[in-house]
Image 1 (tube, rainbow, N blue to C red):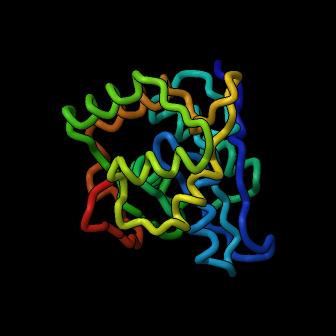
Image 2: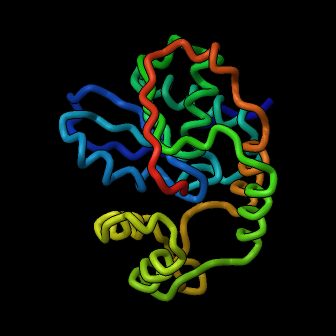
Length: 214
């Protein structure tokens, strides 16, 4: 039997504010949701680092059922029985899975650019990109590379400054995003599987999409 896991959690906003749970995407961390929290100053934003990311355990397995169990155990340990949930990218798929399996936990749902299912070709491309170690000599170098790559070209500089706060130094002194490449590859594989049917998602949901998919 696997040991109970409590994910590392970032909390933003007033402790007495209404609690909202925010779930990040693949290769990011809960810290990456700081900019969102700044737009919701009256709310207490609880943003866990999902397994394989940030300061949470990077140990396998990394399948959807384990991510769900980690999330449930973490929320239980924090005394959060029910809350609105914001899910970005993979976090959106995880939030949808939680609604389908235990709707009582989700008061309402906000899906930001959710990746509910990936085409196999896109998942393969994302996986191939992770086979090469990506590191940076400085935060400025990382931001410049991100902007030049065309990733979210509409994002203001403020977004990338917040994004770069997640970078951590490795043993070689170079900066990297805090995630396990093996975990991310496994998650991309999970995202090619069918999501829960929409008729299982009987909860008030706000879906936010941009004109440019990221």
